[in-house]
Length: 264
Image 1 (cartoon, rainbow, N blue to C red):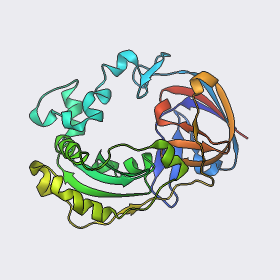
Image 2 (image 1 turned 180 degrees about the vertical axis):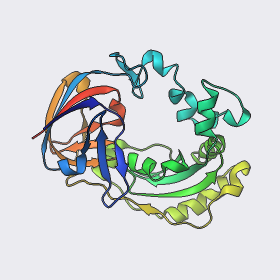
Image 3 (image 1 turned 30 degrees about the vertical axis):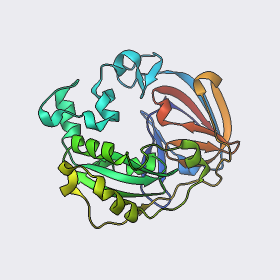
Image 4 (image 1 turned 90 degrees about the vertical axis):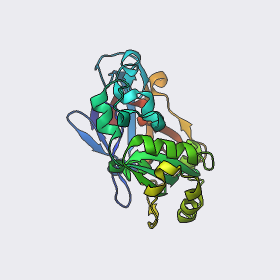
């Protein structure tokens, strides 16, 4: 069976295990059903997620000109502390920025390769944790806008990591942590503006990923260079496909590529 479409972040369902879907314009693939099967990935062309043109992807699924123009790729997306919609101040598109920034946000701890702090919209819990390949996570603070979440993250990352080691995450070289204890320890470092939003009583969320074999030495597939690749799918974790020969393919970092997928 053969499919073709432009890659976008995999859709997920929070089940046991997590269910993963590749969604194309007129079709979708439940990747859990593909485990154990041989899959061929073929690079076809580019398709910018904004303009739709066949132009090399620069970052986040956008061609270079769109990346520096669309509000979805503005600096505040990666650095929430730069959000200004609460001040009624426009960056690229105030209507879009108000829609995204002026809604409840969560500051959380997630354990994927190590304990890290992060920010997401409340509506994206637990999707954000799934995308990071976290096997456990907990909310620390729930604030009414992205700016407050951002300054809280900046304060907390002085005392806990804000990065995930993707190789460690994929090797499953991890350990369980008591995230409630971490939450209580970090409480003292929350900025005064956000301190009233601290979540006093909650428990960590545990996540199970559909992986039958973890790679010992994961090697990343660059489909733009190799053009096609064939391998046996043995797992999906975070936004990565994991193959039996230890090759891994990051769907998220390849958004905007049009690919052909053949399942044998």
